[in-house]
Image (tube, rainbow, N blue to C red):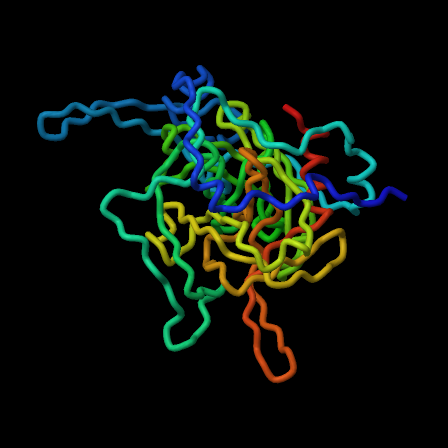
Length: 371
């Protein structure tokens, strides 16, 4: 029987103090043609009756001294302009392991054209806000503590490799690129029971569209993972194949196993689209939080528990990552919150889904869906 294995470096990641002192690495500045082309237009997907080509009507409209063009197309009711996915599959971890190429690298890839920065650029004029729970009440579905988060506007690497995820069930969350066509997010972000279903990923989403261009986005064609039925688990992750190879232009994160010897040290950062900051229209960054405890779970999952990482609606599926040298690597994704009792005390924990099953699933994705 194939067994899960630790993937990545066993040495601890770099301290954030050393990372933040690094100078940015400049890129060539010349965007790939594929990225320029993708960003120059937007596409909608129309389901026409009988499979026939839909008719498109274009008329001129005058608004003040401006001439505009009105484009009318029939829109299918079931997909609402979305591109449907092909396959949703849940399989035993042993089957994933049999299909993993041990030679596949686990490291990140930085695009030569883009700059690399080690701290995202804050929005000018904004002060980094501090958010707390009001009257000690919990914030659903995740806990907000006293840590500092700030929204940012930055399309340099790796910040533009994280984006907003939408699905056919009407939910939104966060996901990250880990390959040319690979997106990693939380398993509970997948609309397992929808038919037809769709998922949309918008990298560097900011005020409603990508910083790389309004057309830089991709629907998901295929998903592999587990259905956790909305529960907080250590195996709440899913690997998604994108129709568009966004990672080929934007680069992507690496991935690394987690060691409990790294507990209680502030190596970690998170990016997401929490609903309590800018109504989830802009990405939020936090760093320097710790993992306080780990709990093993089935399917190769491991719960990374923290009491000082602020998370909220929209953070689901967002990465927890560290830096190994100049290499940013994800060790898990946001799953949810849970309350644990230790004798007479109550611990309110936010949970990242991690474990060897997580990295092996990423490796399976790079092996099976390289392009």
